[in-house]
Structure formats: C-alpha cells, structure tokens
Image (cartoon, rainbow, N blue to C red; front, side, top):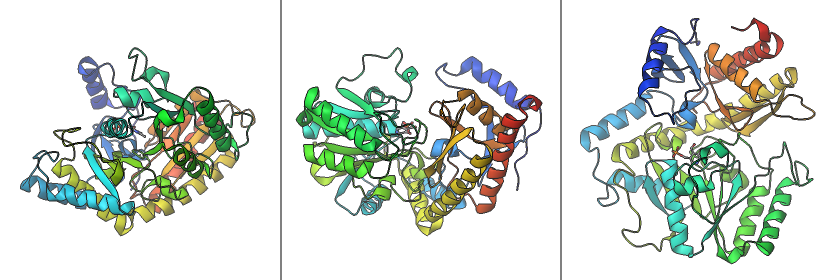
Length: 443
Ligand SMILES: Cc1ncc(COP(=O)(O)O)c(C=O)c1O
C-alpha cells in the first residue's frame, strides 16, 4: 500500500469544504495544512477527494494504534452498547477503576489517579492538587514548554508568545527557566554540560528571587513536544529530580505527548530512571478517545471530596478504548515503537548526511524531530525551509507537522511497520531533494 496524491491538491471537494469551514469555524482555529480527512485505516488517511496519505503525525501524537484498529473498534462498540456515561467523579465504574489500577502498576504502585478529558484539564487538576497540598504559591516551568491553554496551563506554556497574546494577566507566580537544548547550548555551556548550567541558574534564582520553600512544583515535559521535539542532555532529568527533592519541591512530568509508549517506554521519564511525584497522560491513552489521567503520589492526596471534579472526565467508553490501547501496547506495539523508532532515527540520520541543512535529527522512539537550518555551522533556524519541506511532504502523500521555530516533527501511529517506515523515509528524502536541490521545479 502506497500513498498517492492527485494534482492539483487540495482537490475540489476539499477546497469547497475549506471555504465553508472558513465561514463558520472559530477564527482561533489554525488552518495551515491542506488535509480535509474523510477516513483512516491502519497508518493511512484518505481525504475527501480520494487522496491517500501515510500518516506521520497521528492526530498530534494521539492515534497510538492508528485508524479503525479492530480491537479498539470492538472495545468501544461493546462499551457503548453497555454503558456510555454515568459521571465517574461521582459514580465509580469498573472500567475506570481497573484503568487507574493498571496505570498505577506502570509506576510501580503508590499513586492515585484523577481522570479528565484532555491534557489541559490534567494540568489544571495538577495545579489545584499542588496548591492544595503544598500551600506553596510558586511554580517553575521551562521556556519552549507546552502545557495547554487554560488559565494555569497557559501560564506554564512558553513555546510561542502568540498563545499568550491578549489573555494576560494569567496566573501569577510562574517562573520560566531555559530548557537545556543540547543542539543550542546556552550559558557558555556544551551539549553535555548545558543541563548542569540550567540547574546552576535555578539554584541562583533560589538564592536571589525565588524562595525554594515557597515553590510548589517544577513542571517539565521529559522531551519538549510543541517546542520542537527537544531531548534534554542525558543526566538532566535525574539531576532535576535530585534538586527538587533537596528543596521539597514536587516534580510534575507532563507526559501528555511523550507518554503511553510513544518513546518506546510507557513513560519517557523511564529512559532516565526518574520517578516524578505527578505524571500527566492524555493524547495517546485511548487511541483518539478523549481522556486524561493525572497520577499522583498517595501522600499528595490530601484534598477533600469535591475539591475537584468533572462531569465527563474518565468517560466510560474512553476508558474502554484506553484498556484496548494498553492491551495492544503490552502485546508488542510499545516494543514496535522502540524498534521502528530507533530504525527511523538511524535512517533519517543517514539522510541528514546527504542534506546537511537538516541540522539535527533527534528524538526517542516514534517522537522524532528534524531541525531545518540555514547553515549547519551557524545553526541559524530556517522556518521557511521547514515550511517548504512540510508542504512538499503533503504533496508527496505524507502527513507531518511543524514544531518549534524550524523543526518538522514525525510522530506516526505506534503500529507503523518497517515497510511503512521505509516508505516514509524514501518520501521524506524525495521531499528534501525537491526543496533543496530543485526548489524551482516544485509546483
Ligand atoms: C505536553 C503537552 N501538555 C499539554 C497539552 C495540552 O493537551 P490538550 O490539547 O489535550 O488539552 C499538550 C497538547 O499538545 C501537550 O503536548
């Protein structure tokens, strides 16, 4: 099976629907990609004009098991016929109880779970939990981080000033520090030492402007997602864990994008052996059904019944889809993410040798970023090249996404096969050749 795109693209049905959409959809929706999807199967998506795409973005790292996986369809069908909703926050049901137990086991036990509908809701719940429990008003987050767009999530989010424009003032008390990016180390450090330099800076802040005993939590994505798929230097996360413990500060891992097997382990924090106080999961947990899970250490659960709640959070059908997703991950899909992910990164690194304007190939598992630069020596970002590459990928039948200022992110469904990965790499190579070697020949 191969993707195919008829030119001109987007086709007539898609263009007509885009026009109608433009008249009725909120102007806050971004419309930077030419896909108007009709249906999906496996790792392929068909648009309304019959064009077929190989999906390398999985609905922004959500569709863990691809499209229309028979096990997900069956689980959802059975649960829908049985019971759709009863408000888990008030009426416990077996699928959610079992899901909380399974997620707790993945952390080795000792955690409780709060279910919501989205990553943003998860982060909002964490803020309330941390404030309620610690009574500490301040928070630390990282520039380049993305944690959602509610009042608190947006206060933490620092991947694009546009997200905050017009909405301030937000929740006070958040201090942002730089995320250690080994490709562009700051503070005069190297790729290896930039993590230590950032932690030295944090200790400096603790001495000068931010009393550590008033900081409730540090919020971090183990690999920055929206910020550009940036992996921190080895040893940074354990050192951060140590520093937070030293000051009695909670460590919150926002694994909304990195979690649920995407990096080849269930939690990305596992790659560095770090156990956070709180972990937030969402996106990939139920293969496209909306659910989030906040896992927090037992001793943090000092809030009272009614301190927090939700009508839809932990919906019963979404919980059934989450079970089917976890079953598939345990039966080999997570191992596939690890194996195909390593292969994918290796093959892309080979491509990079031919195209040095891809300054860096980085990532873990099936969370892979390509950084477009004007010059591999200066490493100057090249958003125009990234945008041209993304556009060409769509014309070649690949669904991809931008991230950060000049990165292209690849986050396919975790069921992608080696043959499909080979095909994807071949097409990315052709797209790179088109934009870098024959830019004028493109339509
Ligand atoms: C790391 C991270 N946290 C939080 C969120 C917010 O999740 P949602 O869009 O489901 O509210 C996202 C979404 O992209 C994310 O990537």
